[in-house]
Length: 279
Ligand code: ZN
Ligand code: FE
Image 1 (tube, helix red, strand yellow):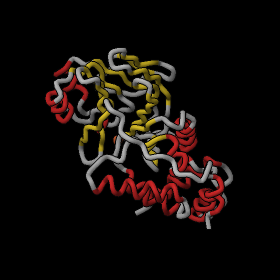
Image 2 (cartoon, helix red, strand yellow):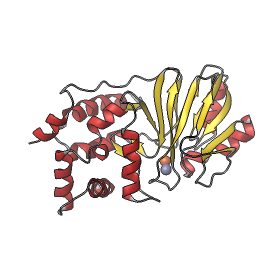
Image 3 (cartoon, rainbow, N blue to C red):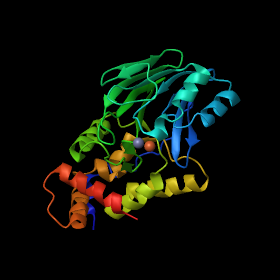
Image 4 (cartoon, rainbow, N blue to C red):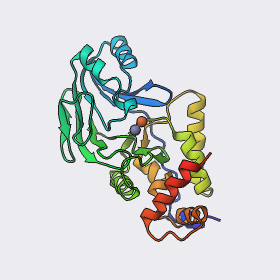
């Protein structure tokens, strides 16, 4: 029934699953947040610490000094631990210029950079509004590995809710991320993968790359492992929000909305609406 999307799959071969990158590890927080820790065994940077305690515990266990805190957006589950971490470690805070944050030493806009030579971390900032008005992402390299820290904008097989922006803004932000190198490792801030995939399978029941990844991710969760990082390649093959131009996705969104959808933004908005209502 879905030969359209099959044909559009680049080479008929499955994208590779992504192995964890040594030096980048998730610190679980709340029920489904990940605080990403980037470390060289002595020094560390964290992204979006919604809680301080789990970070302090890891710093203590691994005897790391925290040099910087990177923030993608202002939501409490991403910034809640910042003040205490700063008080305890003296780490400097880098965050979006367009948002109100509890602490921020360096405000960032698109094109700004965060570099740490000791960590071999070279990141530049992308403005990706939609989930929040001033949401940013960090993209660059850790050593030689391309890495993306995208907060609550792009999730594995899903995307963040559009709270402060418009569907057009969110679609443009996702398109910006979709254009990054396909081998970029994608570090999102929540473990939402399986619930996103249940919905993605409803959108594209004939997507074999998605089915294959779903099986793999289910096994990871069964073993209590994170399903992240993902990759831009996997997202392009499986994430309906990045596939709003695929005939199979347009058709599914049209059927769900029960009206004609004439632009990719309308398709995106219908998909977001569908996911919001999917149980
Ligand atoms: Zn958020
Ligand atoms: Fe969040």
